[in-house]
Length: 91
Image 1: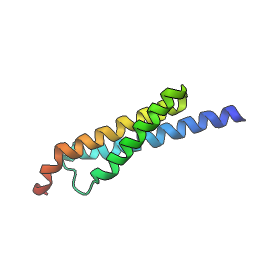
Image 2: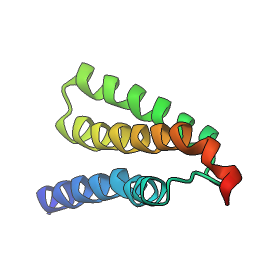
Image 3: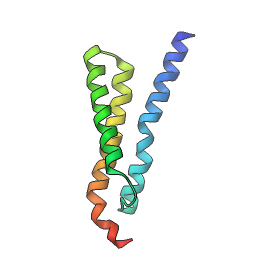
């Protein structure tokens, strides 16, 4: 039972870490980051990177995988926000 819960937790962690990708897709598709909080994604990225470093330090594969994906997802959103923040006047 514990092994099944471990796999479920890993899958849930990966899914939650990838939850930022739809936001990134919307930003890049519309070339607009209006109403997307840069502070929220900056905090999420910083927290994810800290957890990733911690996971690497303790050699914990589930933490490394989930926060690795989370860091990449948040990074894509932040880059989109910065790249398209000047396009917001057009909408």
